[in-house]
Length: 353
Image 1 (cartoon, helix red, strand yellow):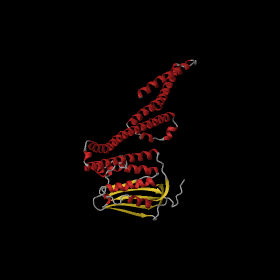
Image 2 (spheres, helix red, strand yellow):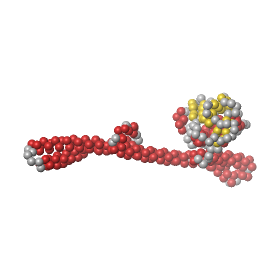
Image 3 (cartoon, helix red, strand yellow):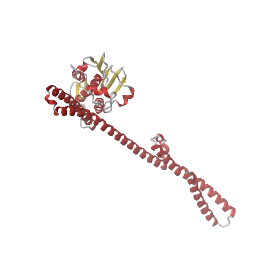
Image 4 (tube, helix red, strand yellow):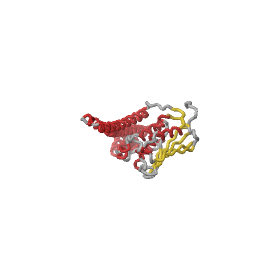
């Protein structure tokens, strides 16, 4: 860029000095030394002015654009923290900034598309794997029966029971996928109402009564709010949220002294729901991904417990549809704690606008 600036400055200065000296020659009585002085002065001033103008305001800005585009390629956006006041007074700097802002926007769009494509590939691989297991299992049992095993009554009953269990697992996956899809796309509108969350939690606990997996687990419920603690939310969806959290805690409990506890804390404008357990816990490296679809910490244990890997993702999406967020704290062998808030409701079932 330096040589180009000099070349332009030399050509411009020569042209200006020749034209100036030529006009001076029309004036009578000017000695040759005067022509020479005028030539030198006009050449020098034109050279200096042209050189700095071209180098700083044109080639300099082009060089900056080139440098910043290279930074964009390296995904380094630190140069966008420049002084915006200096840009406003300089049209070339403003054009430079607008070009680079546009380039940054396009680069971010490309990055988002790449992430979406990666997510799509991972999702297809995950859903294929999840659906394959129950389908192949049920298919195997049915084909075995068709090959002649149905003649033995005991074998027929046992295989049909296993096939039904596999199909139930398949149905759970499909239902969970539909739930996430409906909430994400807005198809499933939140049916907001006032309801007693105390009774809802007890109703969730009632779903596990008599089940063998909770025989040695202490299901507790404490509250820091009145006996009738009302919230304004979609009762059916919040039932799903708490059911998934309790179910998740039960699946990953310790073998002895297992405790799953629900707690309600009253704040000025909302009710905080806290679900915690003293189970196996979640290592810190998994915390950022624990709410992703099909993400499992221990895949073998999840399969053994019958999980779809969608429970916590459903929880996250339902609460986001309620303009709420779920937070988690967990340490290995110390258990996990999940928290979210819901706006306070009224004992009277009127709608908040």
